[in-house]
Length: 277
View (tube, helix red, strand yellow):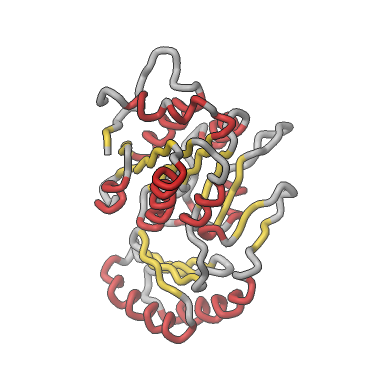
């Protein structure tokens, strides 16, 4: 564990009420699995987020998953006040205080288009390719059928040209989303408004706009920011290159969040498996 890591995180706990802690889900709070429906956060993560939300100004999970999925996997603590924000589909959905999922008005007109595209793709993809329908987005996963990648990418390109949806690459996957100016960067920009410090934890190409939004906050507003990359064997070098801190797997991310929950701890310990980025 390198020296100086505590110094890197300490600005985040100086004024916790004016600090935003924002994290991805898959590959960050949850290990990557071959079946997306089987993904679960590491033990203790849901409770840890609630602990953080009682102290920090903003605590949010921002994911490509549907918001309802996040609500199910990261439930609130019974009997307590739930201040964790669960934002899905890269900002197109959010679980509201009433527990209902709210879809962005700009995304609503695209529901029928995505449904039609998803139906055509489900009828045509090779065996082993999973078509995950998310309302206003559809993702094709080839982790179980790696030889199908080129064909899937080509078929998705055809549908993009036909429908106006935009393809986005991910881990052994490609997703079609509406052509809206909504991504993790715009979400992070909004969540950090008025904050003095902010942190984002992510692991994939879809997280790059979030890191870029942190960098802009630092440059334009003087905000103290920390970008954390959660590394595994598949992590893109592009993600590692923009991070201030690299940790190994969701276990490393959980330790960073645990450190923040205890204001760094009295013993000055640093998260296991961490390295400077």
